Image (cartoon, rainbow, N blue to C red; front, side, top):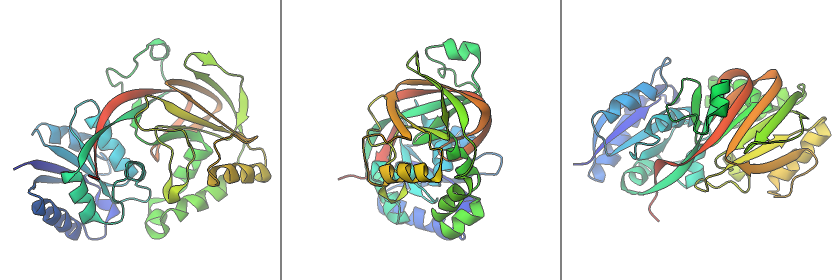
Length: 315
C-alpha cells in the first residue's frame, strides 16, 4: 500500500482531530495508508519533520497548513524527487492556487494530492546577507548554507515584508486575507529606501523604492496578478520594483495590478532574470512566502530550475 506523510501545522485548526479524521478517511478511500501525521512546532515549522519523514521512504509528503508550512516542507523536498502534496489550511495557500490545487475542500485536496499527477516546477532561493564568496559563487545554494531560504511563490523586502509582519496570526485566522489589507494600509506612508539591483550580473541605476518583490509565480489571492509574466517552470524569476512617492502613486500601482496590465506604470518596473543581487540602505525587513526572516542590507536570489515535484489535480 502506498504511504503518505502529512506535516500539519496545528495552529491553523480549531479541531485538529477532526481534520486528521478527514485526511485519513479521504486517503483510505483512494487506497493510501497514512503512515504518519506529524505536527509542526513553534521551534520547527516543518523542516526537521520532513527530514525525518524522508528516512522512511514515503511516496508523498503533504503540507497541511499555510504558506509557511508549505515553504518549510518544500525546502527539504527540493531536489529529492519526492512529491509535495498541498493540503489547504492557511490564509493564502498561494502555491496551491497557482498550480490549480483545491483550496476550499480538504477531502478534495487529499484526493487530488494522492491521485493526481506530478508537475516539476522551479523554486527560488534567497540568501540573506550573503558573504562575498556567496556573491561570487555561480551556484551558491548547492550545499544549502544556513542563510539560504527557499521560496515557491514570492520573496520581498520593504513594504511587502512589513505588511506580512504586521498581519498577526490571530487576525489572519479571524478575518483572513483582509488582515493583509489592514497591514498594508498601516504601512502605506512609510519611508522609501535606496535600492540597487544587479540582474544577471548587470547593475541598474539605484532608485528610491518602497518595495521589491521577486516571484516564482505571480498570482495572489482573489486572482490578483502581480507578476503577469511569471511561470512556475520557465527557469526564470520575475522581479517587480515599486517606487511610489505618494498615496496617489500607490493608487496608480494598485490600478495597474488590479487591471492585470502587463505594461509598467510610472511607479512599477517588472523584469525577469535568473540571478538577482539586491543592496538596500537602510536595512529592510525581508520575507519569503510570507515568513519574515529579519532585517538585511543585501540579498541574493537565484532560481533553481525543476527542483521541486508538486502533485497536482488530474484533469
